[in-house]
Image (cartoon, rainbow, N blue to C red):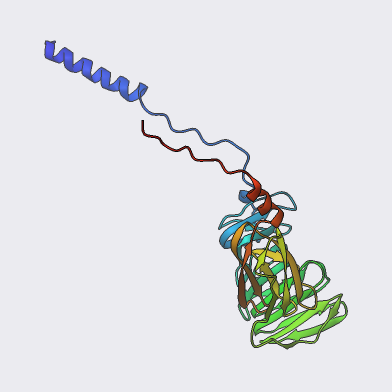
Length: 305
């Protein structure tokens, strides 16, 4: 074999060795605890699905701990979804439920085109007429709202105060031994187990706020007011308890200087209204006197030599 042939043979052997010994191995699969949100659903089980989410939304499996929820996650009976500063949409065929901020839903039963769930906070639901059914239990009461077609809101504070408002279609509402039909534009409320007759919703969103003085030295000030019963109130983005008569009050912490304090109300029909005021917090008088009493350091003057 000529020198050129030997060189070619050696080159071929080197290429083969590189192809077998220098080939990059495939990355090893990640190992860790499976995410609670990715738990497998048993074959044949009918599940609701997370269709959309914004902000902080969490999922709990069968009463367990909470973890971040993702679009596509499936919920079966005993699973729950909750929001903080966020919203989420849950769907099962013709049934859709939207959780607004600071709300929760626990799936109780699922069918091919139906669902039963327990809610807290504010949940907006849509059921395609003639195609599905939705039963909504309210945390803190024995009430159940049923829709076989329409758009409606359920607000439940978890303390037994509930409002059900229909936008389209009608909602059958049962509490204790009484039953009413809530028609479009109407609201029915439950307080202390008593179910009220449906009444027309207010034409405008009610929000009346009593503001503190706009100049204060306090670290926190009271903000109170009045809204339509069954509404939800948020001050600086945080939920505030609303009494059955619609009154609310909260202590709002302040930082030094000027700040805008915002109050948001969401009424039983999901309509929103906001009011705000600028409040200035100054140092307490004793702090200002102490600061003024401190000796000032003299500046060192530059002298020409």
